[in-house]
Image (cartoon, rainbow, N blue to C red):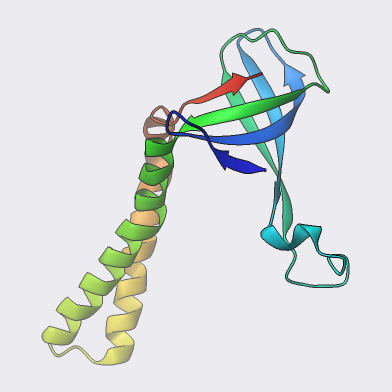
Length: 140
């Protein structure tokens, strides 16, 4: 269950899978809004996914224990900007620029997709640097 904390945090409940000396692995069950519906098992719209989060730090928890994972709300907004807003802007800008240069639509679309793919490849290579700016903590 996702909830917004009082201090600008995003919280998810999860279950501890592994406890290491310097990290904890928590399994979060992400459930869509229609998961409480009686027809959930028959409907293709219901969405339940398991996510695994590795949280750096030493915590006094044990495997199987239920915990709350927190992340700053600002980090969530940063993730949305990096993964959705920037790619949309890049795609639209490249299409507009290529269309203004009188490039035919098919070529403009393919080049725009190539530019977008290069953006995601660049993100892949700097993922460790980006990863350091997203901090998860455990709250009991």
